[in-house]
Length: 490
Figure 1 (cartoon, rainbow, N blue to C red):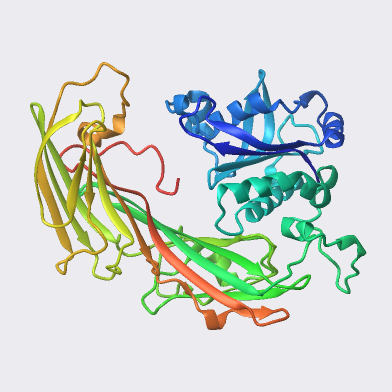
Figure 2: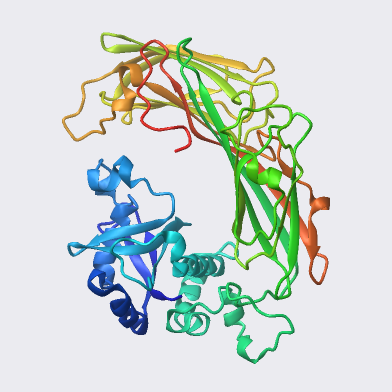
């Protein structure tokens, strides 16, 4: 397991190149091995300039490459793994592990110890997992706390020396770069317990365990008798365990209230050591009944050093959190719009923010708006042909709010304007954006007192949860429903 090269790229929208390579490291010895293993399918590592342009293009981070491109954006190229193939010099460099976090693109090219034609399955390439661990370790080192630019630059300048110790010759020994910074020599330390290959370092400091539950709710609402509304909840449980010892053991229990919606389609991190069979067999494909397993969901595991996603799940909640109605009628140069929103009584009425975005693409700028709003305030972005209804942090006691009015547009500019087939006629929509802290739609929570930690010292337990809207659309009910090109799960 080894890495051929590593890059850190700052994403800089609006600049000619779209970004800057802040750090790069190549491993010539690993590159020679790649030539031998890959044979005729070998593609060399490009220079920083071509790599930067190709990577930002593939990640859709270049300002001039926002239009649809068949080679990159077709349904056959849907990517869910953060592993990409980059077109460089007429050839494709694969696999490239890359992700964007805090304005920095972290990227590496793992060594594949076999031919690349045909492409091997990702699960068979052990260096990909090591690449993720290395990049997450660098991310944790750079952003272990809120940093100003000078501190970030200082840490970037330390990376060459740290990687000499943590990742010599492209082989990861310790993903915790802070340990390397403190000059801890793991080679001279004898451990009574065998050190696992996937966890080369250990933590030193105050013990603590952080658990964050994030649920994203998706919804498609049509307000039509012949078309059913759809909605779904997707949850992620993220953990960061700072515990001393080589192999500390932790057990986290997720619980539901009496009326909570059972968790389904549960996928767990490889560090989970065992699971109840009822957790593994709970599927959204099966019909819901009273016998469905409703917890507690126990996850015993040996945590890695970096922050990681303990598990993912879905849930079939009975109703969406916000029910909506949207109607748009076109009359000459005007549009008449009507919006009704209702917060379900079971949902926590305390938002961090809640907004409804109503786009009018393919038209000229907004010249005049007459409206009546029962709650909140309306902001008009004339040049963007966009209305944003700022609902705020709470719905009124009635839980129902409404917006109605007419929108007048001027002549369309001759300059290039975005054209979107999903924003005209029958495909006009309203999109909701909201976030609720200390709340999940399923009711899922992690009880601090149920967390079991088998390690030295008594750790501090931190738990957080939140609900976020994701692809929450309310379609124009006045026209035929739009064509759906993918399932709600995508």
